[in-house]
Length: 146
Image (tube, rainbow, N blue to C red; front, side):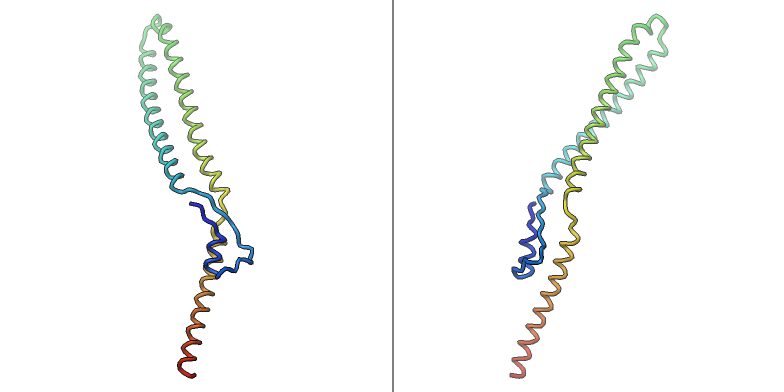
């Protein structure tokens, strides 16, 4: 969605753009929604994978604790490797979530506040309505009394 507020202002004010009201918003909402949907699905998938990995680590840890002293030495390396892999996966998951948040945060932060534009358009619309009402009343007056 690419909105040029000057065009909206001109349409409402009858072409009077000398009030200094000018802003441009370049924010493709449908594209952003699509991107957020993809990110949301990826986050849900990562959560599910992380939950499965956590259960597997808990099971491997229980097996390690139950193992005899001789077997613990051979199981230790694979258990340590599993923990390292899970830490790496959690780090990637955290980075993905942080990047998703920062991406949308930056776009929202850079977007102008719509309130002043909407307030100006509302005031202008009301003035235009009053002008039309005055013109209509004047024409009605002319028809009746002239």
